[in-house]
Image 1 (cartoon, rainbow, N blue to C red):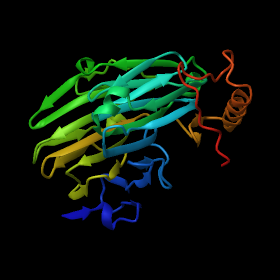
Image 2 (cartoon, helix red, strand yellow; image 1 turned 45 degrees about the vertical axis):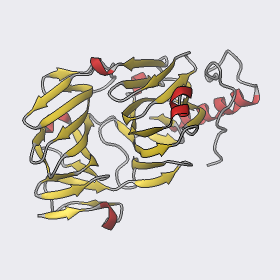
Image 3 (tube, rainbow, N blue to C red; image 1 turned 180 degrees about the vertical axis):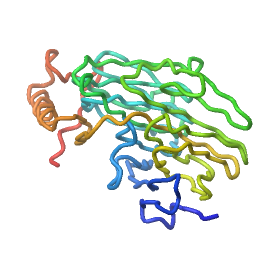
Length: 314
């Protein structure tokens, strides 16, 4: 039995030796000032898995009283953002007027469509108390016919999310349909997304019918095709065959997949099937900044926000 461990990996590899695994991706770590984010997607060798075009592992990070996250307002187009926490809380405020703090087990699903602006900040009470933050933030690209849809925001409380239990396995269905259950999240294309907590030796099978699939190891170790993958690695599964995943010790996994949507351009926080839409959004964001964010226009600031992130130079 072989092992793939983040500390000795080169970041990613093709995996012809393992018939069930097409590629392994170890994330790149970014320090965001007091806490770390590990970016898995997009990677140099694999830009997307199904509709998933962005996958960040946030923390775990310990914030002392008075400290927290402050991501200033910024724009999105052509995607939906999914925020999913294991620990802590994170405030969301957007240009539609939604202002809510998400907690573990609940789902924030923000559909950018033709354009939305939002900020992510630690809520005042959570900041004052100090807290631990740990979670996953992912983006899914929208089908071409949904890229210009009106922006929307949906919050699903923890008790609305389907729970699936098998022998030694407890899963929360975040999006899509799997194992006889369907998530309440409104999706625009075939998708599967679950948190899976496995006891030592427990197994779960990812069927080929899910489309493109991947397993991300949040905690512990998982065996696929006779190879053990350490935490903080994503195993992108080969097409065409069911894949059994076995926990080696207690493990927490994210299971994700869905139908591919075709090539997408991603630049900063903007995603589109046509690069011209990216250029138009860049121009609109610059114009909104120059004019002081008027109430009319594609990009406006969320209520009670006076800051923004400028357009990057590259």
